[in-house]
Image 1 (tube, rainbow, N blue to C red):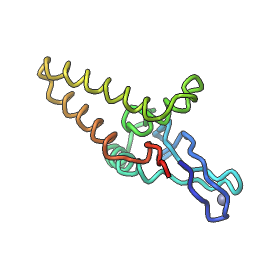
Image 2: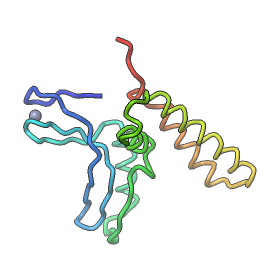
Image 3: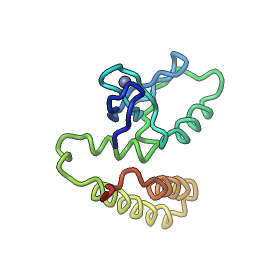
Image 4: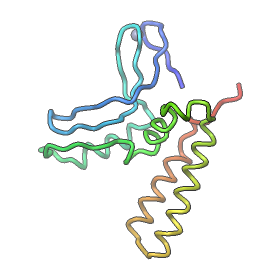
Length: 139
Ligand SMILES: [Zn+2]
């Protein structure tokens, strides 16, 4: 999950607080940070969700605090992975556990006939299955 910086050093993923228009604080946004020249860059994977979030805020957003891990499944999983007690666990098992959790929620949402909730869960499941970055590459 590393990326190379223009300066040649490798960049690590960090969860950062992003402040939009000095008003909206978005916490836990995954960014690549270069430990050498301190350049940072938003993960390409989460750009669609972040762009969507920002456009939903409108041109004059209210002062508010958001948690990106509640919107983006990738941010949520990165947050889980970086929790100290889970460092030894393979990412796959964390993803699998989250997928099972979402499937349980989907069954619950279906039984309540809550369409909005079902759509939300389906969107989250889609985010998890769409991204392959979190899977370990055997090569
Ligand atoms: Zn650099």
